[in-house]
Amino acid sequence: MRDLKIVIKGAGEMATGIACRLFMANLKSLVMLEISRPISVRRGVAFSEAVYDSEKEVEGIKAECGENFAPVFDVWGRRNIAVIVDPEWGFINELRPDVVIDAVMAKRNTGTKREEAPLVIGVGPGFAAPCDAHAVVESNRGHNLGKVIYSGSAEPHTGIPGSTMGYTRERVLRAPHGGLVRHHKDIGDKVMKGDLILYVDKSPLFAPIDGILRGLIREIEVTTKEKIGDIDPRNMKEHCYTITDKARAIGGGVLEAIMHFSEL
Image 1: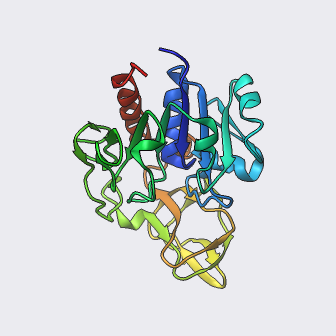
Image 2: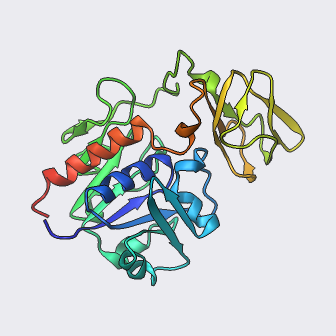
């Protein structure tokens, strides 16, 4: 199979898991498109951090952020993944990729069309194959996680986080109102129920359970009820910096879809 040019919309946790899976499968001409102020919570495993820090490494794979489209081929020449700030996805028209993957994880289709590339893959709710995309990858935890759907839709968004040691909503921190986040704890810190984690403006937010602070949004402006933190009750610090089983499964589904249409 020839070297495919692949665009991934998004560079958050799930998009990063997909990118790493493809990269390790020798599909290395990868570009990830992000917004100017990414809001990733699991920053230890999100290539979106390259937007702030110029580069980001996850599990030995490096992503570099460029201010425009020109450096992409240089980044590929260094065997790295390119990240570009392009919220309108204009680079797709310039690159004319072989594959477009929508991994924004917005729980809905925010504008992706099947005509954007010879192969378009949608991840999660909001996509139907073969209407919106040639294939859809299931993102809901459970029996079908990572399944590739060639005719039909992914399961609807439940609004309930996946269970970890019996905890679902309890392990997710959300902003009580809009405002500026200020950290009191850092990613990787052990916390006990009741510990102060952060402030949103002057409002303190406390740990609802014991565990490891696996994810924490940057000190940026957030909106009401936005996800801003993630506590893992398993107390495994290495989980803060490694790709999850869910992201790996979704990445495997994306890889299957690309191989299924390997005549590209």
